[in-house]
Length: 115
Image 1 (cartoon, rainbow, N blue to C red):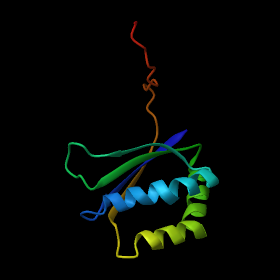
Image 2: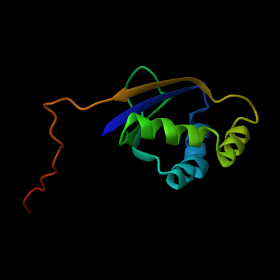
Image 3: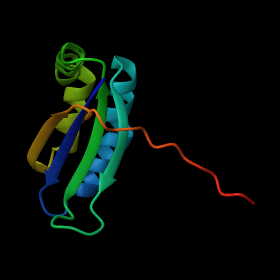
Image 4: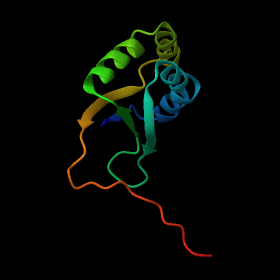
């Protein structure tokens, strides 16, 4: 299992438009294709309040390449992209990192407090 961290830095004032695109189009397309998001975050305290950060889970690099290629060529995605950028671009930069777990990582197990 590998994970991909993607950081989208939006142009000033455009983060809401990117979030709307994810909510109204991207996630449904990913669900159809089988792309598995782990979570999405924005920066509360830090260097950029224009960032959307998210993690994707992949079985392998081959799965990532195959499904991402299907996503970026999907006609519904192309239409959503064009619609969201009708008044101009919304993203200034995209950074992507493929992550692998360390040997010492142990998944967090939530422990509920006693009543």
